[in-house]
Length: 279
Image (cartoon, rainbow, N blue to C red; front, top):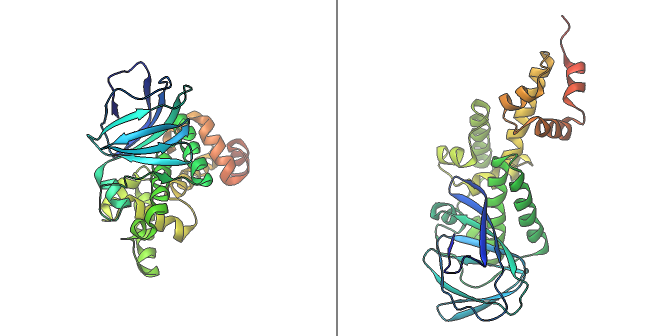
C-alpha cells in the first residue's frame, strides 16, 4: 500500500480484499516533527483519517488532514508527511482498482487531489465497515458497503458525476434488478462484481439500483435467500447447524443463528419445531 523507508513507525494490516478492492488498517507512530522520508504510494486509494492530525505534501502542495477529512492517493505518487503532534495517527485505506474507481467517478480513474470532507454519518459508516470486515462473516456485504462508502465520499465533490451511467427509466431499473435476482437464485455465491460484469454494468450502479428498487442491498437479498434455504432444510429435520451453516453459505453456526434471528425473530431450533413436516 505505502512504500516507506522507515518501517518502524508505519504498520499496515490488510482487513479485506476481493474483486479489485482492499481495505487496510494503517497506524503511524512517527514522533512530532517534519517528515524527512519520501513515501511512494503503491495503490489507488481513498484514505480516511480515524485519529490524529498530519500534513501531507505532494508536488509542493500541503494539505492538513484530520478525522474530518479524507484524501486520495495515486500509484507512484511521492508524498511526505509532517507530524505536528507526537501521539500518532490511524487511517483506513480503501484501495480500488482503476475499473472500480472509474465506475464511481464518471469513467475517470484520476481522483480529486484536494482533501475530501467526511460527514459524521460517513465517518461512522467507514468505521463500522472496518469493524465488520475484521469479523470476516460476510465478504459480499463488506464489498458492497465499501463501494457505497467510496461513492458517498466522492458524492460530496460531484454527485452528478458519481450518479452518471445508471439506468434512467424505472422499467430498465426493474429489468436490471430482476436479472440480478435471477442470477442469485441460480447461484447465491456469485459476487456483486461477477453479476455486474455479466449484466454489463458497474458494481456501484448495480448496487445502487438494486437497493433503490427493492429497499435492501444485494448482499442482504443474498442473505435472505440463504435463510430461506436454511428454513427449507430445517423443515426437513436438519439438526446439524454447523453443517447447515457451511452448506448454505454462512461463515459459521453463530453467524447462521444471528442472521436467522434477524430475519425471522426466532432461532433455528424453534423454526425446526414449527416447520418440521410430520412423519
